[in-house]
Image (cartoon, rainbow, N blue to C red; front, side):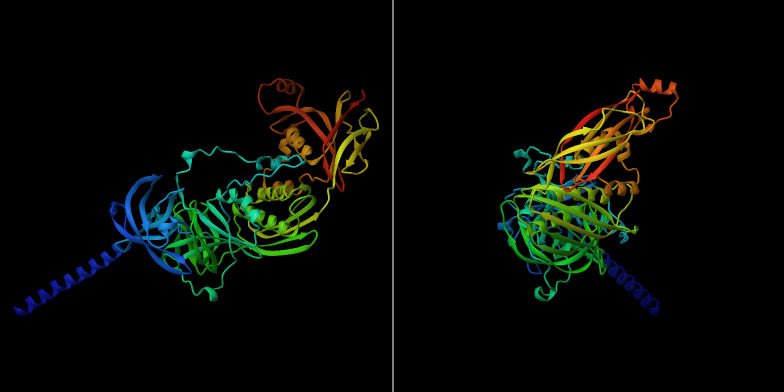
Length: 603
């Protein structure tokens, strides 16, 4: 009997041991994170971040409450922070992603703050929301592109040149800044540290980057690991998304929230909110905390690249350690009073690439040439697109005055049409830019236009003489010959116009918009490479034809009955059918102005 009792006791003890062990395992899993339902006001804990160098330090936190359904299916934990430099600095840009713990259980990442707040009160993105949205999403393939987004550049100061239609929406959209809008809960600004960039350029482009939630600051280039010491990523460590590296550098700094195997999460709020993305991930070194009443910031620089960022979503960013990100090699050559070449790699991102390239080109010009005064500028941008043998070339000449940046803005705006196209994903393999600057004004106005005959018949050749007046020079003449088609209706009145590229582009859009709105990627590339150039004099003859246009498409062979019905239709999109003969004459000047004359077709 003693043996069965002993066996029974041993079995009971074994079950108790298994239960206790299972309980410990369950308890350990439960202790790793804390859900918002367990959090109540008054709870105290700590957070981790870097205030100097690469050393992770702690600060104290007290829970003020939980904002349920703060955003769509999102909660926010409200905390008050203390300790370290926070008493003087308040919330610090670069703290985004700093992990917060209660009872040694991770509750989330510091991510939000109030503008001009006097106390370090912050919003924390719950850790479970971060894990659900970032770790459960499969990483994007390296050769994929990015989500579509509109791209705008900051306002261009006016000069004597009229803006083209492509530049029309570059003008500022002024919004009234009312006092009650100054205090609002927003994601903590992510500092973007740049080196090699002129201060004037950075200040001019600040509205462009702040629109992306970035806080551009001048800093240094990458710090070597040898001089900064080893910086292994861990919760609370500084991390950086590398945007440019080489002769120019740019990186956005935040904080690591959580690491699981080779997966890294940070920031606690979106960087650009592009979804799947592909950027180099680096550790970072903090030089100091710059305290400011408006926006305190960690002064930092990236260390070595140790992985790639694959996700950029509502609750933060995520990356993979040990993987590499493909950047686009770029070169910028500036030739003027001196000649300089710059080489760097740039992130392949349809939202940021045009903005970053704009910043680099402006800085390259400003470091080489004078800031004020008249100048003539020729820019050639060649972009190699994955899957295409030949590069796409965007080229134009400009007259610029007092560094208005009109020339560079125009070229970058055209380049952005490719990166932000609606037809297909684009991978940029290489970008090469050549900028040639002359310290003089090479412009000419169209003074008059003259034709060799006032009446023509179908099949005639019309000679058009255009009088140009160069700046501070004597008038010169350019001649163009235009063949009048055989099918021009007798009795028609032809409009002959000599004009610059800006006026010509507006005529293109008003007379035959359908021909100038690409419907596929190949048409877009053709349109971009053949955009009107400022140094080409255009001579255009508008030719009326039998038929109608409907939504930009011509119908020259309609039956008379259908033509009669549609001519009096009250439906939009219907108009008279025109054709146009255009001769473009290359000149050494940036052409300005327009003149017109009428010619009658003989009966």
